[in-house]
Length: 219
Ligand SMILES: O=C(CO)[C@H](O)[C@H](O)COP(=O)(O)O
Image (cartoon, rainbow, N blue to C red):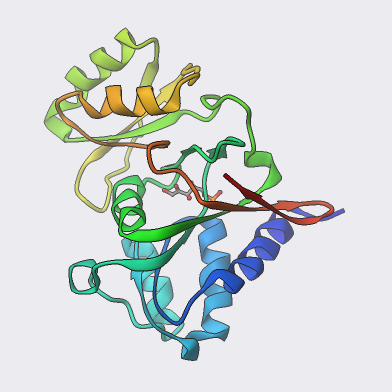
C-alpha cells in the first residue's frame, strides 16, 4: 500500500516532465517541497524559478536553484503547485499553507498550471476543507461578518501571519456549488486580499497520485 507521502513523491516526479527549459513558477506546501527536491536533480536544465513563498524560496536556494523576482521575469510557461481540494473541473481550494496570494499571482503569470496532489484531494463539491481568505488585519472583523452573511463560519488562523503581513480567516461550512461566482463575490469584500478559491483560473493539468499510480486529469 502506497503512503500519502509516496503518492506526493510520485506526482512530484511526474511533474518534472512538464518542466520546460527556462524559468518555472513553484508553489508551496509538502507536495511542492517534493517537487523542489525533484527539480534539484535537473536544475541544469532550467534558468531559475519564481517562488510563491519565502519558505519555497529558501528551499529552492538550499538546492542551488536560482530564485528570480517575478517583476524581472514576466510570463512563464508553467507553474507547479499542490492544492487542498480539486474538482474534476479543475477548480481548487488553496492556501492551507497560507501562501495563497503569492500562489495566485505567480500562477497568473504562467501559461500552464500543473496541479500535483494525492487522490485524497479530489472532491465533487469543495468546501469540506475550510476556505482560506487572506485579509488586511484591520478589516478582520468586518470581513468575518460578511463571510457569515455568505453562510460561512470564519475562524482566525491563530498565531499566523502571511508573507505579506496579513491574517488568514479559515471559513468553515462553505458548500461551494458555484466556485467561480463565490470567488468573485468574496473578492469584492473590502479588506480581502485574496480568497483561496482558484476557479476563474483553475489548473490546466492535474497529476493525481493514486495507489494504482499517477493519473493525469485535464480540463
Ligand atoms: O495552497 C497551498 C499552500 O498555501 C498548498 O498547495 C496546499 O495547502 C497543499 O499543501 P500540501 O501539498 O502540503 O498538501
